Amino acid sequence: MISQSPTRVRYRVIAVSMLMAFILYLDRICLSEIVKSDSFRGEIHLTKDQIGTILGSFFLTYALCQVPAGWASDRFGARTMLTLYIVFWSVFTGLTGLMSSFGGLLLMRLLCGAAEAGAYPACGAVIRRWVPVQGRGLASACVIVGGRTGGTLAPWLTTLLVVQFGHWRPALWIDGLVGLVIAALYWMTVRNRPQEHPAVNEAERAFIGEPPAEKPVTAPELGGMLAGFLRSRTLWLASLYLLLVNLGWAFLITWLPSFLKDHHHVDDVLGSKMVSVVLGCGMIGQLAGGLGADLSLRFLGRRWGRVLPLALSGLIAGLGYLGCLSTTTAWEAVICLCIVSFSVDLGNPGLWAILQDVGGRSTGSALGWTNMWGNLGAFATAKLVPKLQLMTDNPEAGQRMIFYCCAGVLFLSGLLSLGLDATRPLSINTKEREAVG
Image 1 (cartoon, rainbow, N blue to C red):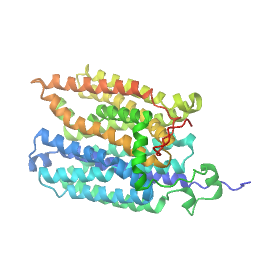
Image 2 (cartoon, helix red, strand yellow):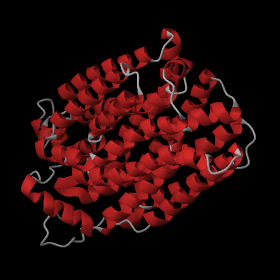
Image 3 (cartoon, rainbow, N blue to C red):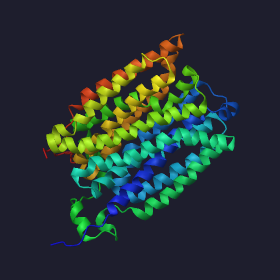
Image 4 (cartoon, rainbow, N blue to C red):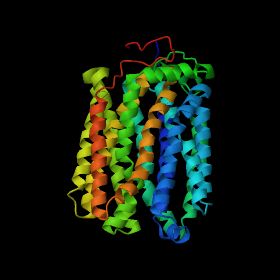
């Protein structure tokens, strides 16, 4: 019988994972603020289509590298690979501050997207091993809140640094240095499993539970793993769900700063605060979604308890975009977009929990697969927004078309989420079928 109190190393693991997610989103979003700054526009002359290509290029490589990066985390250990990922994207963020051409900026964003691709798949695998099933929704929410905090503060912090230094480049150099510090903290704090951490006592190991001994997916097994992904209805629906969600959500982290400046004539400082308010509502949504995911699991079971928050998320977020059609002032639009931000993030913890439930020893790869499709949606949004605006000579009509499209894809995501099934684990063996768990 265990008489000692459990240690709390798992909370340190979650805390440093939140730090990782913070710098992940800070480095992802900062360029959206930089490209509208006067110092950037005065030095580097780019068309809106070129800016859209640069902003969208991040999501392209971020999407395409999800599965290989997730597999590498499963194969070689999340601690090692995620530390390397943080180092790489921090270096590329800093190097972005040295670029002076469309080609250079495009290359750095492509590399940064590829480096960030493995972050959430690897982190999801860590949470699966460090948190018991009944707490994974909230633990996932905490990590994503770390990311949303970085995204929320990115507009304000980036604008502050640009104003303080009088130029856009130092902001990127500072972001890169902070990332290297967080990489070191992550390496020192995290282990792949609780059993490997010297500070974890027997009571905490018993509380977490003993995850099944799982052999990493080897290179020869990759074909079987991908075949299992292709056979899984749940994984396909999760991928399509996230693609549609990101199609609707990515406007907030790519074109919202420019929308406020160009359509409502908001200055850079006030605009950055408005964007921070919008993204800050996502943090509240993440926490509510994490609690809701665990609560609905307790009352409705794994099949329906996991999908209810996702369905509500798509419905409410779509209504938020439709509300934007009736706004006349910047703050009215911000209120509606706050509803979108809150509601989209309401569903994220539930989706993570579903993938952790079904992923098994390929959890990182499964998260990567789903995130790949989701970020193809974000890539498409960054490119489609300026094209939709050019479809009409009236800028207001073009913006209304954007809001209609965003609302429509979010409504559809909520409907599709009802088909997800967290009771059907994945199989990476091509000779096996999914078994009901």
